[in-house]
Length: 303
Image (cartoon, rainbow, N blue to C red; front, top):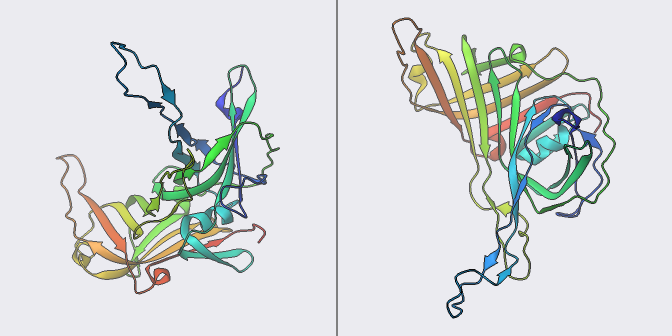
């Protein structure tokens, strides 16, 4: 009998969208989720002399998508960071990323164990991330969530042999938030969420989607839950400030700097026996995409 812990996730950048390659990086922090197919049939609505049941069915449009959850590790992360943002510069051990056209696609292979004990390889081609988020909560491991859109998947590709280096995930202990140059105290949680609208459409001549391309303006938003500690941050509403989200374990780090427009919010009194909460919200904006938000990843991953 098999169980979820027999599963595995590998990925690799494709040289041409939708043309699968052999995966060679394996994420030690995959926790759940994989893209699934939505492939409803086309049912004839022809009127056929009193027949109550459908009698003609043809193949319809196929869409493959779904959420994938990870614990956030510093590596293997370079390929994922490129997919998240679109453009990176690699200084050898230091990756700088900012929003740009997402030209890269991934092959992702999920090893999914069946009940009899066989790990079945589901190999997805043409994978891109229309949205993603990084979340930190006090007392927990940092998480990375990606919404994956794929061209298709097959089950006939051999399962790649997974190997993992010596790595540990970022945790809440490694995290910090600063606003307008000052660190926030009593942070309970924060989230950086990205929405990268993409065309996911079918056209005449095939059941699979065409290549996903950008179809709208991207948005990057920040939400921070803290205890209310005065009006300094509250009074930044409707102004532009620098917001820095940091994970640093002493060796590796991921630092995201945002030029942020602060959304006005108000502290909340939640009860007689609780402290007042304050939710800080901000939107990343800038004269250039890189000025709006930039992430710098430092790790020991080969270029």
